[in-house]
Amino acid sequence: MIPAETLQATHPAAAPEKGLVALAAPDSPAAEQYRVLYQRLARLAARRPMRVIAVTSASRGEGRTTSAANLALTAAQEGRTVVLVDADLRRPSLASLFGLAPRAGVAEVLDGSAELSQAVVRVGQLSVLCAGEVRDASAAIRHPRTAALVEQLRAAYDLVVLDAPPALAFADGERLAGAADAAVLVVRAGATPRQVVRLALESLGDLAAGVVLNDVDPETVAHGRWLYGGAREAAPAIANRRAG
Ligand SMILES: Nc1ncnc2c1ncn2[C@@H]1O[C@H](COP(=O)(O)OP(=O)(O)O)[C@@H](O)[C@H]1O
Ligand SMILES: [Mg+2]
Image (cartoon, rainbow, N blue to C red):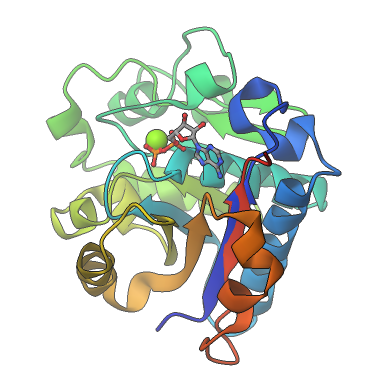
């Protein structure tokens, strides 16, 4: 089921803070596209559980972290209580994206050396849970306390956004990403072969709630082709790209 498809235009080139357009350039068309994505997911939430959303992709470098962070910032700006979680424990990147000093995160909460409340850090209205110091990623992604951590987050926030590993990792049994209610698949426009996208969607199965077509040429978006062409009524799409 692919009910929420969204297009993300390339981010404005001048946007500071490494692509956090929802924070740095809230009036930009790119930030507006994240609001569109958020609204579509919010509408979808009326029909299926969407409290814990994994933002994933078929391969690396497609814009999972960028999309997850901007979606979470947008939801927080819309007044929801939101936690953004670094669930890509093999390649954590939220700490550097937000310029946060090394701190306890998922790894420490899982091994019991830190409380969740100590590990979560506020960035404006948004709560962020970094990965922490992941010494053994293989063990961390299968940690038996993962389900309890996700339930704790679910109970404490309106929305939990997971910066998840690539989609095939779900099938590999990564517990954090696997605990999501729904997954949004980020596809880098013009980069990911159709067949690879199809495989990623198959691996997600019913978890797939939508597609974000990332880094789209604004010219293409201007024609509205990506947004509505061929999509089912309940299948919105988002494009995002840096202007220029
Ligand atoms: N819409 C976009 N426009 C321009 N650059 C982008 C966009 N999305 C992602 N990027 C850039 O592409 C690179 C990879 O994105 P990232 O979100 O880290 O991917 P992933 O988490 O999937 O590996 C980063 O340098 C990021 O700033
Ligand atoms: Mg990433």
